[in-house]
Amino acid sequence: VQPNNYSTFYDDQRQNWSIMFESEKAAVDFSKQVCIAKCNSSPALDSVLCQDLLLGEGEGVEAGDSLEVAYTGWLFQNNGLGQVFDSNVNKDKLLRLKLGSGKVIKGWEEGMLGMKKGGRRFLIIPPAWAYGAQGVAARVPPDSTLVFEVEVRRVKLAKECSGSDGLSVSSRDSPAPSPVPSSDGFSSD
Image (tube, rainbow, N blue to C red):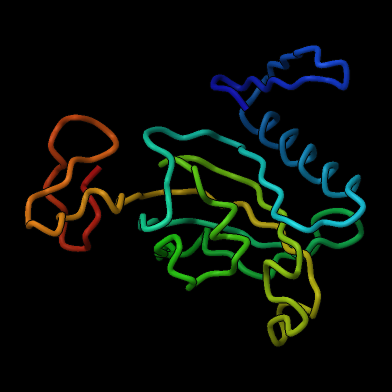
């Protein structure tokens, strides 16, 4: 995925190709279908499949960074997107999480690494990296492969917090000093 609705890829002869799409929606839909095709063509899904939909800006997030995300989760059924089982897209509250804290499924911890503020990513997560054999009562059947579209709305880098000597550690985003954090601990930008 490239800026301005471009996607680049290479074929099995290692020849590079670029496609320019008429709209962001067309580029995003194509990228989702590529990820679904990758999933359907793998004999066994044993790790998280990630496909960027929009790249975002700034530094990629790492373990220890705090994020606020909007997401939608589908069951992977009949080789494609099944029913939505969870979403916060039309809700007032974003999901807050700290990467690497173990508070979300392993597939999210892994699949969101490297995302940037404003970035959107498509994740296909095998059961072992999601809810496994137990599932989630009335929402996720046992041994379900899950699909998520996640968008990082806000980021607070772990390195923006104070160091052990009490001095502020510089941001990975820019050499400029960090803005004064707002009351919820996220910078105003």
